[in-house]
Length: 383
Image 1: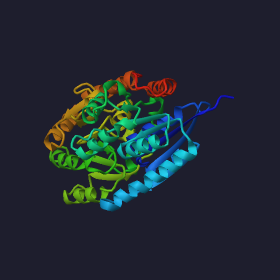
Image 2 (image 1 turned 180 degrees about the horizontal axis):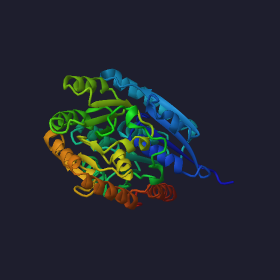
Image 3 (image 1 turned 180 degrees about the vertical axis):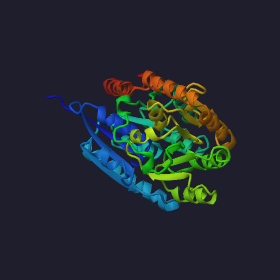
Image 4 (image 1 turned 60 degrees about the vertical axis):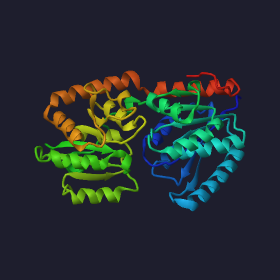
């Protein structure tokens, strides 16, 4: 009997988010006859942990807190020691990490324990995070290979870490379009919003990155002309309280609805007219792919990486990031022109089916695993 290859996936958190969904999709598509799979969350287990854990041979959490200052450093050292012990007990052939904290801890611990293959995934572009760029650059030699979620993320990483281009490749997020079907759909009465309302949705964690405040300001402008406009906020996060307060102070409590965590976005799509992502930075957001796979037009910020999935004027509209007037104008255009919205939705679905299939994502990842293992960890091109 062939020995299964042991992979340890390390991810910063297990809340409901794009990186977590990408890991879940990858793990559920791997052949369990070939791979023994373990997952370790750097932070305490979140709302997505049970779904991920159900697919694995073991799930672990380092319980790293969000505390800052000296305590954060001590906590990180403790988490690193725990990860080293975990790696020593599991003896993985591959460590594949997702997101910044997991990348740093995973590569340091993996190198100490002489793990044969260490892969870091670049999921987010943070232009102003100079201290992260510095840490990434200093620890880059511990990483055998990088996988970027977009060409923009790949170029950003090369620039800020100094790694050679052949050490990093782009693998887009993939969508299994057969998963994007109404199923047991949410109804408008359950939310509740009027049946004749124009419904916008921002699906993502409550963090300044996602641009909730920009959308709130845009909605204030829209309501003067389109009073039947309603907005859904779906997600979780530390800044939810601040965003709820902003909604109340703007007098929008009757028009903006907080739905909490939505585990299956496909169930929500039938009640939405337009998906909005006013992010200040991203990598390649999964929710945009899910929306387009569901035949919905997307209005998103014109930021690095976004134009690789949203084709401006064809599958959606890109607007100036952080500019509520630009966002309001884009939304108004689609809300007034239903035929344009339908054309963009149909074009988006075709675009996802042609370029962002999950099976392609999985196959490209497996090629990297196989090549790095068989080439003795040499950093020759594998993309």
